[in-house]
Length: 259
Ligand code: 13P
Image 1 (tube, protein in one colour):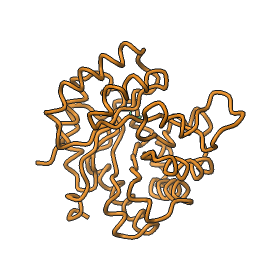
Image 2 (cartoon, rainbow, N blue to C red):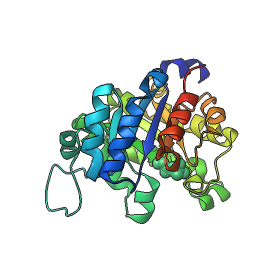
Image 3 (cartoon, rainbow, N blue to C red):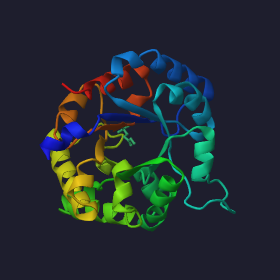
Image 4 (cartoon, protein in one colour):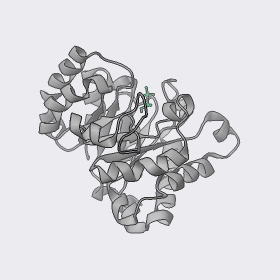
């Protein structure tokens, strides 16, 4: 679907996971704010820990940089110790939310069923959901990658109307490439992204699928970002470790600018 790539603005998001105290987060946000004029052709977002989300949003959201929760509950409120609602994220200044990150799926019991509730809840709150999907190493070794990605997309989008789906972002993050230094080759990543777009087309139609941005995540670094982002179905990246340093994040974002 090379012809449609122009319709999708490049997008680079940093997932800080469980890193940075408030002072460090504010220092990063101010330093990134000072570099935004270099990056005006790329949509940017940062997903800070909850404790510093409001500080980051205060600096970056007025400048047009997205600020993302790393997770949220689908319910509008209730006795769910340790959780937050979509509305609470909005209240803290978030513009979007990561949903279904593999660390939440693998380490914190996040299920496809829960995600089917979370996507519509995020959209109803006015948040841009980034649905994270990806196969494990064992699934890839057994030839189950395509089936796993299709199942995760079908479950995640189960309760989303096709007309709303264009505002969703998908992040393809092969579990074996996250934090391991093992990056998918550009060819492996492109093949997975093309499959994802074909599954999206079956779920929400060709036109909407052509508008949905699909980001690659998994050991993206300044040194490998350009060759990944050059692939026709890779619309940017979801960056973990390399998004903790402003210099690396800016270099990766610059690699996503249209050439
Ligand atoms: P790394 O870039 O550290 O591999 O993490 C990727 C990721 O999980 C982003 O959500």
